[in-house]
Image (cartoon, rainbow, N blue to C red; front, side):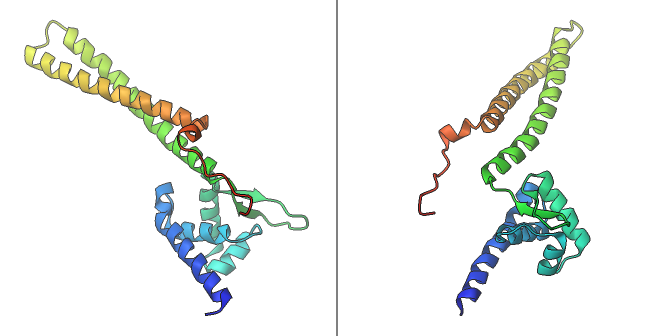
Length: 182
């Protein structure tokens, strides 16, 4: 096996690994292959370049690039003399993860917190209502305790998201420093 073949084999292994795991970002395996292919290019690519290399339609490439761009995994690039749109993988995978994690979890925390707040108010009103039966009052009281636990959890999760966005997470889990030889 030639050196070129070995190089391509190692790259293909990583590209397939990305394709298999890109669902964590809510993306399809073909988008993962596109991302992996872009990752190994040292120059930005046009949609035509990607279409030729991956054998997918230009429409599919465009849709995938838009999805990757929305998640801040790829960005537009500029090159003198090139009139077509160029795209490249973003340099900061840590920030890309933080952005994705924060966007998705912030939305979830907000939805859950609003539901908990509304339900707590209604349950507290139910418990305070003199016409509520003892059985319903007891069940509502238990539900209140459960919702208070959930509220504490989502407040903690909100602080965790803050730790990611403020980069305080790196004090707890430091990034590996690049060595001079790398």
